Length: 235
Length: 235
Image (tube, rainbow over the protein chains, first blue to last red):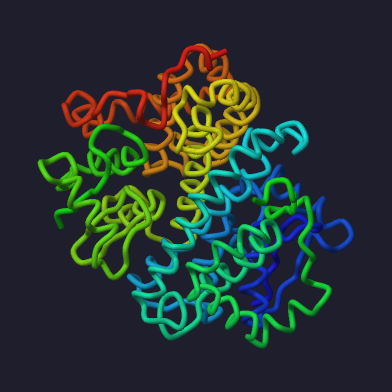
């Protein structure tokens, strides 16, 4: 199966969680919007005659199926890419963890856009500072601490046990992104989640991921994505 | 199967989307935290020896399974309560819609808490006003307009066609809640989504829902839940 991924071409953003799974598995896929005319195709699928139109990118075309929402795309791809167990209870547990990643990602986004995405960052800077202060003191440690607990209970080395899953790839991306956005705060926060840092390292060493990170397909972090480096927010 | 629902006892909140599905289907369930000592039991499951601890309420116990995240609980319950089709593609489509409901609910919550849940509403009132202005002008019409389009494409009378699903129950709850929180704005916004209003009316007339709404099990809306009536936010 050759997959087609639809996502904004200039950022890692939410699409990156899907890209990492496809790349780790060495799956055959096309990153549609990164080709000439691709963004237009993507918009047409959202606003056109599609009988089941996605609300927003990313979405994945797999044969006739069009699937949106990162967590759902990974739920679908997981067993097919050998990045998820097959038993229903295990798949639901993994999906539940990914939905918690989704909530965390939304809060990370809000560090630079607490009053909504329609404003420029510069137009709500004091609010971003207030939001981020609480985010770095309470929320980020709470989410990461939760995943650290999950890892400890599974006995590792991966979040759901002996085999790597798409949730481990997402944890890698969370740590990479948070290090990019908040290097100072992360030095402090990481001390309490050594297990997750080890997961990050193990994922970075996986052959598919290593190759991907060194390729031009990996878009560098930038200030249009989810993880943005605004030094004034990093305490 | 007798289900056990774990959720905060004083609010509708996110748990209400699950309650509506259980009630519509006439399922046997216990609303654990609404009984003496129940909240303590709920906290213990999150912080205790559970091998797969939920991050936050609501969560559902179904036999040995513990499932968290509203959209995932409904994904699991859907076919079991006859509130979802059984084919994989259809179930994924329904889940995708519910995940969009989830995002919408998070933005509704942020109208009164744009800078995070740890502050009192009173401590970020000007920010709540700025956030809500954009929410009522852009975001709420965008989400509701999307669901109106989905309904039109399915040819109705329900969001995915001829049979009611858990997503229709969620649309009912969204409209009820938005009417409670923003009665003025909703009079204007509803004009553009007559199909959804008809879904709301059809759901309100379903026997299980009608009985539930008239019972003491339906907690009234209040200013601790997702939908809060702060007249200064309603333009």
